[in-house]
Length: 508
Image (cartoon, helix red, strand yellow):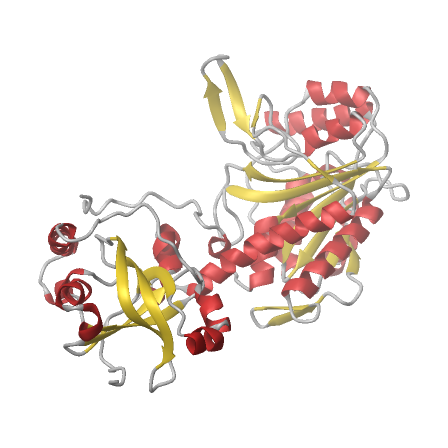
């Protein structure tokens, strides 16, 4: 048997002049000829093994001379005049197929050699063996054409930009097995989160995406119109206000993993459509939620990291240790040398601008403090850290701190310099909630387009009586960024939002 040659056979169109249109025309011509001899789009294929199964059962299958049937995408073609070595890739990876003219006959061999291209889908049948270079291979005695790649695969997709991979996710997944594994890991992480909450006896629920009034966060919504009802609707910015109504109704532990939508800018940690986990438990406070969050993160670090540790870039975070706890205003006082609780808004604005913060017109104290914290403190929060006890104006839905006036019982979890989770001892006094909403409306009237409107239906629900409640929200996309070690949210979203791209006009 001949050894596998080093140089790949190049597709006919690789040497042809012209752009994408010419390549498509060449492949369409091959397709027309191919269609005269085999079905172009069969309905199914009877696979006997996946690539991991072939590798795991290789010894027994080879010893028995068993016929295996294996489908996938052709990733390369190498060979001489009468033999071809063809890596065929399924979801998990490639298996080499060995085609011989003497085994297939001249007509069949002509199909695979001349008419079937890199990127096409085929199913091969044959027996397993090892080549002289010790490559597990299938000696093909028959094959089935499954689908034509009319557009050729890129030759150097690994070198293409993140933007191009994000726009062409199908090519990213086809060419990069590490991308497939990353998105499989995302699915496993979310499944494990669900398993955790089931063990904690939380009930998974679903709440409306289209809402007559947005709320539960400070963010600008996407707006749409319902024609049949002739009413404006908003895509939810948070699940909070609906989940709390379930607590009012007597469901004591609820959670939702859902898509939220915020009409905001995009950067490496923000996408206007994102996945959020929110959970609420009656009779809990933010300390209970802190403990729950720590248990969840430690479990994920053990399951998807290395013995409870995660590496993110050049930083290592240890989730086996108790999470650090830091008071919000204490952290700012340490960085500025001032007790900012005693500073008026005008002076706070001057101080923030002097520190390089970007202060926009209409910003209240809450946004200025948040900007200062993001600038001065967040980048240094590498190890898992609960930032606690925020100023009231930053948290219109949190309960007043039981010990310190002007603060609320809230925490944010920071890891690797960015926020992962947010939690409150939830406000359950409807009179105080109304005052907080009215303060938000004042900010909205002053030009803050991220302030929350007054939600009368939610207030009416609270007036029916809401027990003491702890709540927590966690950004799933950012969490997965940590667990798979990537610094850009596009790497963990199959189809991130991007600016429109000019079409190449290369359609059929």
